[in-house]
Amino acid sequence: MITTKNFMPIQVLLVEDNPGDVELTRIALEDSKISVNLNVVEDGVEAMAFLRKQEKYAHVPHPDIVLLDLNLPRKDGREVLAEIKSDEHLKRIPVVVLTTSQAEEDILKAYNLAANCYIAKPVDFDQFVRIVKSIENFWFAIVKLPPE
Image 1 (tube, helix red, strand yellow):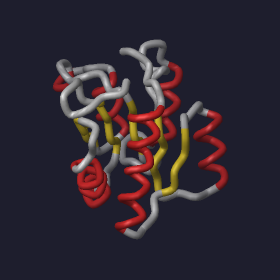
Image 2 (cartoon, rainbow, N blue to C red):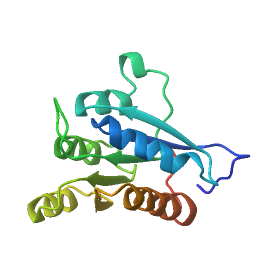
Image 3 (cartoon, one colour):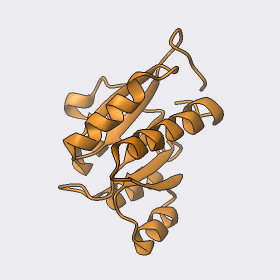
């Protein structure tokens, strides 16, 4: 789905418990040429409730893409990824793992669980913004996203 400010926004679900990283992601997406609606949940339990449109999330939009941290409270990102990719209604949603972990075992496990890509978060603000812009350029402007 390629879009501009005049069309339907790209629906992004950011699963992130660090408020600073949420704000950096929001800043990086704000001046986008593409209309992006950023939804944020802080843990894996909330992520699955959002994706399954349960309870308070009954009327949320279907995400076009999920940006997923691995180290989350209540249910970690590995569990969330496994649930998404084993659910017939969710498995086609692209999942970009965006996490601080650079551990080889985390990278292998994420890909074995069918992550669409794995990106280690840089600690530098400018690099973080560049990474989010790169995600935006690739996933929102180049890739054809699956329909809901």
